[in-house]
Image 1 (tube, rainbow, N blue to C red):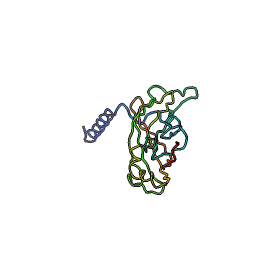
Image 2: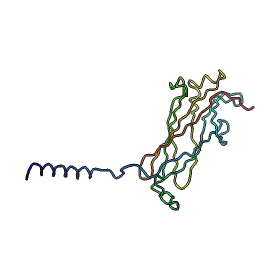
Image 3: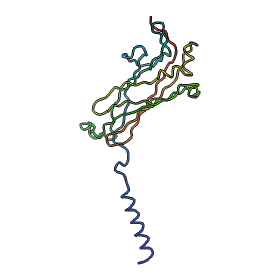
Image 4: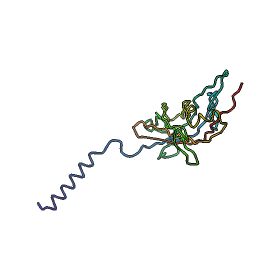
Length: 198
């Protein structure tokens, strides 16, 4: 047997060995996450949601100043990368996506983005919701009350300034076969010490 035959056999054996090392979940999943809508509630009325985001950095209740988390409600929908015929667009159970955590990052349009100085600290949160044939609308915190007692928001309690900061919210999850999925949304948040109802 010539040297060329040995080389060819070696290359063939290497190719077979490489093919057998692949994982079961190769490539990306067949479904993706769509954010249909984001709504926001005022700190003192967590049951009512509106389209614009305003964060009151201090709320006076019975003459006592306090702070609250600001809540948001998100509506999810499932999309299929290859939906097929119009009469066969229902996702299979394997394509359902379970969201299990989220990340909030703040930044400003003027580029001044030092956390704890120009913008609040970014943070991670968690909830669990599964998007399949139903479109869940989970509620979560997008501004922590602790951030209202730290720079730069704490100063707004006394200086009367209204500060506009963009919140980028990224949701993370997996389909039922383990493929990682994420989707992001952005909203402008008006921070200030707004008037309280008596």
